[in-house]
Amino acid sequence: MSGQINQYRRSTYHSSVIPYSIAWNQKFANKLQRCLPRELRNVVYRYLWDDNAMKKWTHGLGVYAAQKVEPCPDQPCQCCLSPTRTIPHFLQAVFVGPETAQETAETLYRIWPGGHGVQSPSLIKGYLFNDAFHAGYNPLRTFRQLAVTCKIDDFRTPRTTCNKKSGAYCKHTASERSYIKKDELEGAFEDLLSIPRKEGFVLHIIFEQRNLRLAVLVEALEAFRSVHDAFVAARAFVGTKWEYTGIGSGKPHLGVHDYYSKGASLDAWKAKMVGKWESLHLRRKLCLQHCRYTSEPSEDLCDQDFVHKMWEKSEEEWSPEDEKRSADWNDSETDEEASA
Image 1: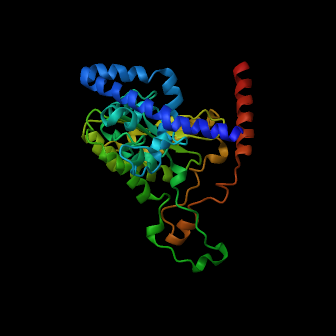
Image 2: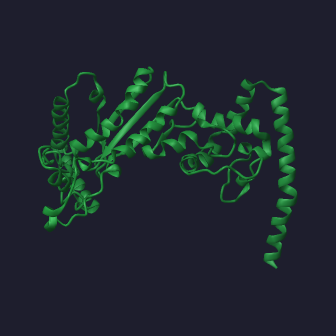
Image 3: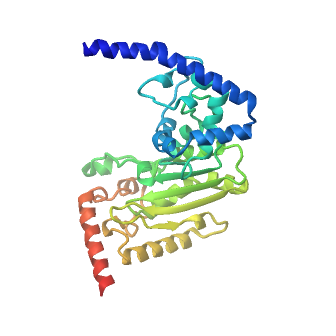
């Protein structure tokens, strides 16, 4: 009996409630477009995106935008009526028409709380181009600020699978002398060049590391250079910083914008960066097991030895549990110093 009742309710909802809601909202949206200028319509859209709506709906924008969104087969879009894709009716063209849906989506992107950001360079393209809500709106023309977090360890060149005992028979070439997947990272950053109006744009890039490898950081910074120079030439603001992600670290960070200074000496920059890391380590802000910048392979090694030594044996053996214990010990030491 309960199954029949639920079926009846669903049938009534789809045959009566939804059609009535669509008709009423379309009538309201048509009147909105006809009677109010865009400036006043924006006031209405801002009212729709109140605090409750923002808390309920905006958490999904990054998820939707990061996914590959296929063109909707229905015109106007019907897929957002799905219970698995519960998007506000005022973002759906089937309810309010394409023009109102696009304007509402634009308002959302413009008032997005906390600014726009992605957690990986590989997500830039989807975030800039995807019509996340199938509202027919291209978000690319709205963005005036973006923060990109680059977890460098995610782009590391995979550890070689060579058997060390048979290392003498390995054949590695100079093309393998790269700590990171440079082409992949460069390509991801280059999606930023699609932003049409770069002048005045605010771009923040955060390079995150858990294992402190100076040569790895340099390659990641270099992968961003062409995009950095293009935005600076277009009079955009570009901020770059390095951030440590060890457990219990509080994420200490350092500015690395001076890496891109014209005429700067790479050796001098490296020495300066190591000095800053040493200072953080002395203040117990870095886990000793992650400080690997003192034992990186020499550039003078042959290709075979260099490839074999790009990863330290213990680089992945220091577990999060060990890290947590180290962080707790550091915290207790800091507390003792503070109370002394």
